[in-house]
Image (cartoon, rainbow over all chains, first blue to last red; front, side):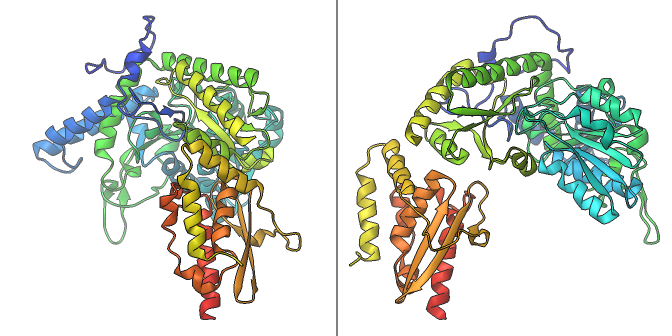
Length: 416
Length: 140
């Protein structure tokens, strides 16, 4: 898969050779390890390495600074990467794509900048009960600074949001809804287009945490009409330390910068400094140049497979996993059984701590995550210390799922 | 009369050397866990928690005749077993004995992965706490 189309319309109907795609991932291809911890971080394809190597060998320098040829080449590639991301999420304007350090960094940036611009004492930020700590704590820090309050959309027993509670939670004091698209703990896919529409009817802008959505489905920021959206490269086969904060220009550009430094200024004087517009206003210092360029190659790779095909494959794998788990393991409780879910299956072996299950699976060469998944309020909601979480990616196979269940059976026998 | 701390460690190493498979090792550890009981006369209070990322570990102690008696509990069975193993070594010892022992035996029995500082399961923190308590009695 070395010659890739540029971001292609993901509507091919040709059957996909998933085994050939699996072979693109050096760490898992031909290895015994069953990697079901993709929600924590996904594995990297060869194109990622090749893109890094290519830039290091041929066109690496700092960006936006030099008149020399290398710097201009590097700048071109870095800005082309931004265009690729913009196209991948269908942003109207590539300047609306800001590179950050990851989803956490994106949300901290927005929480600070939005808070400085818009939040007064008594204002409210609306979150949900299934948020990752990264979409809770930055808002709490800001709320504390500004005298604002956090409101929470409750989670129902099946792990979906209580949509009937929405109207009572939205009002003139609500300044922003910040919401996860796909739950990292449960796999629940929230009805984001509906929720955005609903919030907009109250005049409330919406920030979408797409960290677990962007790896698993096509994203079209204009179609869903979100105002801000954040995701991480490393959860979608790209580098760690790189993420994206998208924002609609008219809402994003007026916000004050979060961090100061080089590259983000217009004119610096000791009396008063003025700042650049989007996107550089929010990219202080030298960015993750190699990461962004490699990420663009990864996005081209994913688009070449087709995000719709990836979504279909992952929905099929995770629903097959969920079905077999529920049919064949009465000693297991599935946590989160919402009708719409993708990739993640969370469960408990009744009467046993998730960590014991995780350790015994690890000894059988299976990587799953156990614990609270950085969602302590959600675990409290279900009254559990944590879960065992299997999270599948398109390069996983039905055969791995079968082997997983053999190992789970053995784990349960050992625990008895 | 108890065996000495070194004898206990040697015995543990010998026990583990007999196991042919990881399954046997873990079954042994889990059995130790099943038999670890928190004493009835002490309350399992929150301030005794050694905060780990994945499983809670409680640790309490009493000083009797220059020996420190440790009590521990955990939510997770494997951790409970490992904790019981640590107590079989460290409990009912003098502070000096506790401070003298180097915990490299954990490597030899093949379970040290559970005690590395980067595995945030509370066990490493528990070992540090045991040493800190011993040090406090030793210098105090």
